[in-house]
Image (cartoon, rainbow, N blue to C red; front, top):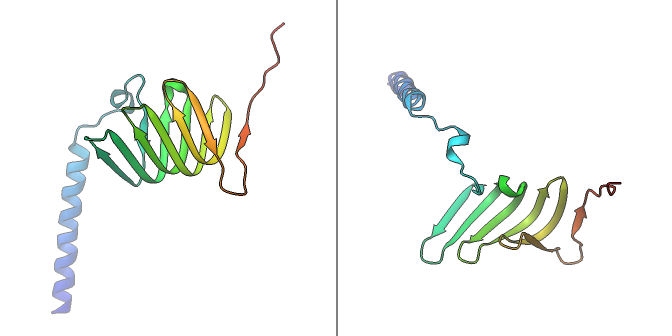
Length: 138
């Protein structure tokens, strides 16, 4: 009886795998160029929540942000986007890179309309930044 159950399980698994492959392969594919619009911010994470009443989007776990219009890429443990204030707060091992310049902090606030970062370190630590300084043109 155990061998019958195993063979039925394998058969059912093969059917499910075939159906999933069919659905995945025949579903319409959207290219990355089609899915992003100028000025858009792409937010990837393990979990995301959006509250329509407050206008707050929260992302937790392995957060990655890509903002091509401002040449910004960031990683953090958590991100909260306050759409009404146009403010992004990143927390937990935050790393931001923009045009080759980078900054590490425990918490960072990005004021979108001002294009300004405000960084705070963990207690007993410091914010670390690396800037590319070019020689003035002559």
